[in-house]
Amino acid sequence: DSGVTQTPKHLITATGQRVTLRCSPRSGDLSVYWYQQSLDQGLQFLIQYYNGEERAKGNILERFSAQQFPDLHSELNLSSLELGDSALYFCASSIESVRDEQFFGPGTRLTVL
Amino acid sequence: GQNIDQPTEMTATEGAIVQINCTYQTSGFNGLFWYQQHAGEAPTFLSYNVLDGLEEKGRFSSFLSRSKGYSYLLLKELQMKDSASYLCAVRDRRQNFVFGPGTRLSVLP
Image 1 (cartoon, each protein chain N blue to C red):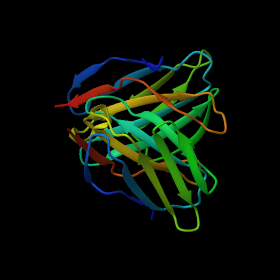
Image 2: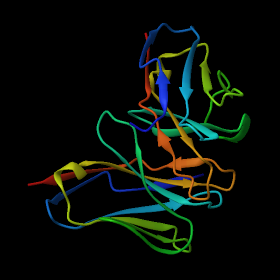
Image 3: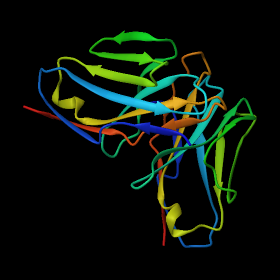
């Protein structure tokens, strides 16, 4: 158990819908990262927040958005869902030290039908 | 473009040593990471290199040569539980993480 929690564990929805994935970082970690992992694309970095501010932005689609709240939990919003958005979405957290060791949550499996 | 290459699959015998190579071409360099991911599970951090040289951590070591855009992960005294995918990732100058496709390692008895 990494100490990072993600909800829900599984999510099944239809094309065109909108969903919200939630992540609670490890106690004391200020940085949150979101990743998407699909069979054909591998692990893709989406976005990073540090203490409420956006720190880095990767391959995140415009239909996707994220935020980190004052209590440091984070949400990833996915809208106008397409079949290709079906994937495992991981959240990770770190203290934001030089080594930047990231601890991954168990992931949310999203299926778009 | 940004690119990270790793062998797709490797096989080794229990108790042996295996070296997993990673070559990268990225927009700047702010560190290289190795992660282990067992099937159906989340990645777990193994190592971090930002300067050239070898970092050792128990049975695992990671090497970096920035001038060559090259790293390797060395696993010693292989155990069955080391069967997993190993992901190489580079943080570029915009602080984005670029991941390789992963190397699936099978450890045979």
